Length: 326
Picture: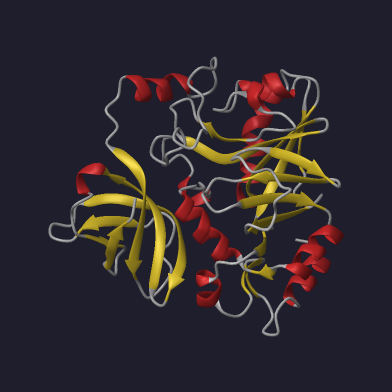
């Protein structure tokens, strides 16, 4: 994050922005932000953009990612995963069409590992890869006011030199890639919310993000990426495709991503285990989590279907799971 942008964010509340590891988690009141339902704007500097440019970029990504690259255009974006040959997820991303190639939007901490992994194969194609995370500002917008924005999930538009993408969810949410001046204008007309509030909306929408702690821990099915349209089963071969297709057509899927609430005294750490209350059997793993109310957190977890009706606890302090919502 550029110092000038961080300084701007810190001034968006009389209480100042609360930063953790360079990320503005809130502007003074986590609970109020979590409960807020109006039009809002969130800085997404904890995400980054890996650019893939050149005439061979489409063919290159077609063989590396789970989405169908033919569906990616200046009017359409897609979620996708990059996997190991054994079908384990290395990174989740949103693939965005750019002027001279594509942008892979993902948690910033995964940019360098993803760049290193893809660079091994890029040499066989006419394409270049680079970290472009600091080339623009990433914003998350929420609200019904943006009537001139794309209205269908995954649709993409270019307006006044900014890229706008309609995200998953019944309530309108948008990813914006823009310059600093335009970003400041959004903050002047919308309520600023920190990263916790945005993470909470992602959890409620059912969109998980793999992190450094959980790389290679899940399959695409474990985190519901096929249901989100992040895996295309009609495309040709890509890394991990054989295993992923076998699970879809021949396997009996017994584990899925679930949205739940937990009573806890601190934020459940990514990778924390769920266990059954009575006999302490492992039931699942936390993918993402966020504060939603006083001593209450919501999380996306990947868990075995057989424990859906079982009393569960989370982590070494055995925080009680209140409800598996979906």
